[in-house]
Length: 218
Figure 1 (cartoon, rainbow, N blue to C red):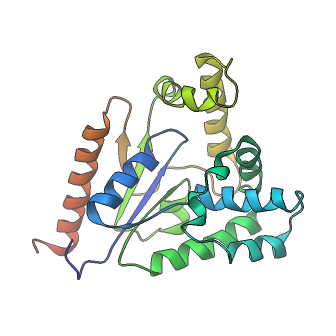
Figure 2: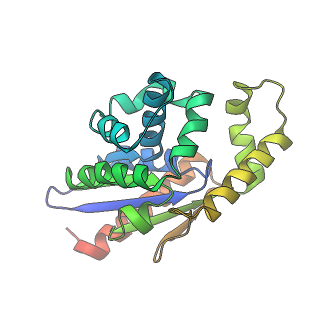
């Protein structure tokens, strides 16, 4: 990537739609700073649980100041209790506003940035150079997540995983604060029938095309 290029990518999509995988591929290929916004809420949830479950605006503010990219790679962030609490605090406006500040600082910290989540293109990076919106069929998503869910409950069935994902999508789309929507001018990326290699090729072409549109042939 040319050193003079300043390029920001916002990626949104439902749970298990392939956005994290896709964004990591692009971040690595183009040497971009990558942030999964969901890990911010998970980190706060983990710290809250370590603090006996109590939290308020002041505590969330203090926690946000201790966030580092290294800490966001902690495997404990994906424990069931952390996942559950993170989905609760993510619905609170003051939590989203505090973590929005962290994301804005992250965007300003590098010329090449890609952030994925559920309100990035509409709220966090509304002026992004490229907006992506990931989609995947429920049946395919359930197959992708079945192994992960079985770590929590080994008796869970594919049908039960489907129901869980449908409810998650329903809640994300209809929540009052920062609902999951396809941002204006976003490019739809349907990952249902794509292999990881095909996804990488598709996203690479989209990024290259968008960079050329902004800067021409460098």
